[in-house]
Image 1 (cartoon, helix red, strand yellow):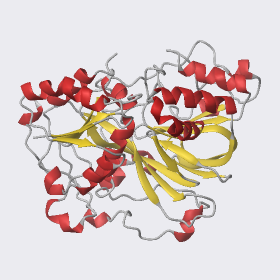
Image 2 (cartoon, one colour):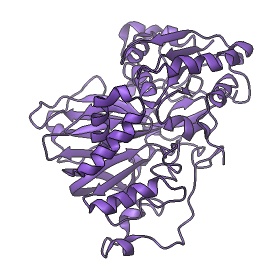
Image 3 (cartoon, rainbow, N blue to C red):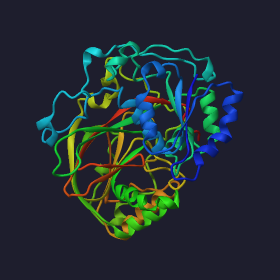
Image 4 (cartoon, rainbow, N blue to C red):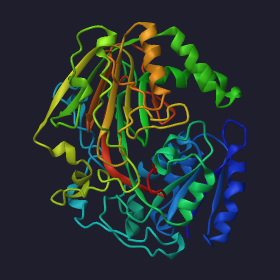
Length: 451
């Protein structure tokens, strides 16, 4: 049995209902039982998922969102927030929140971790033939639900998305296409691919706020500056539907606002990481563009060798989900100045307007975030960067004002009063935050993008 979550698209266009009506016969003919929930307001999906008991969740094989990335983010956070107990992201010694850090309920209790992982090797079999198994457990926060703890990470419980949103980047990155029927077929066939999840912790909402940690999870992208301004501006034009993002993006680009901020990140010493950040930043714009002989990209595809690399079994519990934090070859690096945007991509974030995504060689499950810092630059130079994003085979990261750091964790502190982030398409106000990525924390009904 599987839970299917359906919603009427919150823009008022009814995309969710129409999309579900088109694919519902596939589930019926495959004899996959579904329970349909139609949400009618923003935040309702979060409330439904967070209120489900572990007993109820254990009776399903997964949850499917009929909607976009923002809607899936609601479901993901509703699922993880009450169940996943993990330490806060690592931070440098001078990060402000450490002064008032304490044993919050989200801090991991190592005594409650079992060093045994589960697996269900049923990728090639229909969803309805899959029995439940127990697995490694990270304790739930609902004490009344202890009798049926929900294992995290979890091999058998999966998430799916039937695309009905504005960009549908997660679907494109995990299935290779933005086709509802393809997604439905992946679900009924019980496909599986692991997906990294970023934990974003807001420590202060504004410069004068008290230190009060608030956790959000992201499956695709978190961005500040240009990205935060676009999502904020677009709220004024909800009546326009998905076109509001194009209009808002144009308005924000014309304003060309930059922000003073400080970012620290864990620099993982490796030949494969932080390549663009180590190049020479001297010279003019033309000199900063790399030669046509680019290094070969390791693109994430179906049966990806990078994503399928087995984790270090010497690590237990949450430590096995953050392998790069345990490396001896790490150090904190710092970047400070005026930025047009600060972005952290969990996956490549491919979409119809950016065919290669923000980072073409990002992977679904490698335990890294791609931190992209766009420093203040002339208007025409920034336009050139944005234009490269729209081209297949473009080079949006190869400019002297662009820093690209492949990292497992970072921190951010704004120097101004305004600080709005875009987390998977949802507004998140944060003056100071830290973030880390958990490798393969959730499974998706997908097999990875094909060539």
